[in-house]
Length: 172
Image (cartoon, rainbow, N blue to C red; front, side):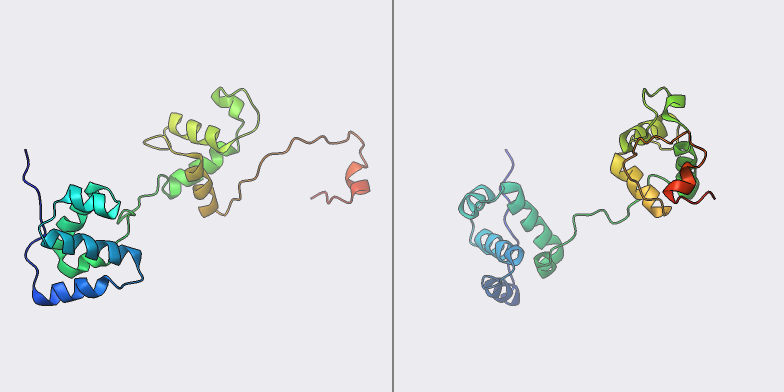
């Protein structure tokens, strides 16, 4: 069985900062201060989590971060990755644009209209991406290229040679 973890011994200025944090309007700072002060009094993480209504892993994370970073642990960090790698580089994005100019039927799909999901599926099958991507990734990649994705509409054109003139459509 693992030994319970506790926060390291607090310096006087750290204890004062944590006690001042109990009056913070920021919920993150308040929760962290409550966790760290309770741990400094010898309470174990499961008991702290029970008293504060949070997960015991949250308590352990707060204690570990305080032990590593000190008072910087009171500053909320981002949960986003530090680096985000695009699924499509510039050449891949252009290849996606060219792929979408072809019919989905050429790739074995039973429709003549592209959906974001079909585009994601085919881009993986054709080797444009190393792993499967979401429809949102396809939409974001197209947006980077300046292409707006809209739902395709089926429409019928009249066989009348004067159709464009009558409807006021330009011919070129």
